[in-house]
Length: 226
Ligand code: SF4
Image 1: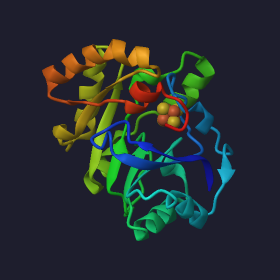
Image 2: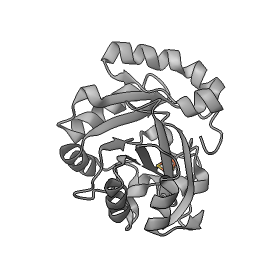
Image 3: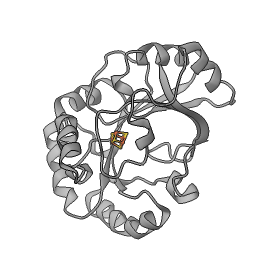
Image 4: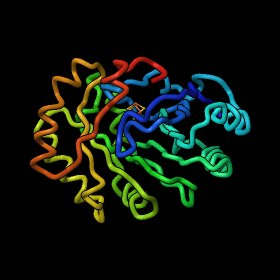
C-alpha cells in the first residue's frame, strides 16, 4: 500500500488528544478540502510502497500502544482491513481517521474518528469544487459507522453560522450520542488557531459539544511529521 509517512508524535485532536501515538498516513483522498493541511497525501501514488509487514515493523519501532491510521482517506484503501488486523495482532489500540464517506464492516478498530466535512471545506476553484462536492457528505455511511463502531464526530467550524449545518447533519445521521460530538477550529497555523479558539469555545459552552484541540498546530505550527 502507498504510505506518505509513518511518524511518532502526540495525537493532536479528539478525545485522545495528548496521547503519544504512531501515525500511519495512507496516500489518496477523493476530496479537495479548501483548508486541507495534508495536500501532499491527496495523490494515491504519493509516498512509498510498503507491504503490510513492513508497515507493522515500522510502527513497532516505537514502544507505543496507540496507532492512528490517517490520510488522505484510509477507508478507501483495499488493504486497510488486513493492516488493521495485523496491527491488532500486535496489540495496538487503533484509531482510524476518516471523513466518513465509506463503510467497511468488522474492522478491528478501537475508535472511528469521523470528521464530516461542512460546506466551509469546499474549494473556490470550480473544477476542484465539483470533485469535492461529489463525495463530500454521505450521512447514510456515517450512520453505519456510528452504529457499528466506537466513534467520535469532529466538525471543523469556521464561523458561528456553521452550527446550523452541524445540527442539520447530526439530525440526518440520527442515533448520534451528542457527548461524542466535538467542534474544532478551522486553523492551519498557530495564529489562526489562537484567533478562532475563543469563538469555538463559546459555541461549545452554548451547545454542550466538546472543544476539539489541535495540538499539532498549537505545539508545532502544523509542521509535517507532527
Ligand atoms: S478529507 Fe482530509 S485529507 Fe482529504 S482533502 Fe479533506 S482534509 Fe484533506
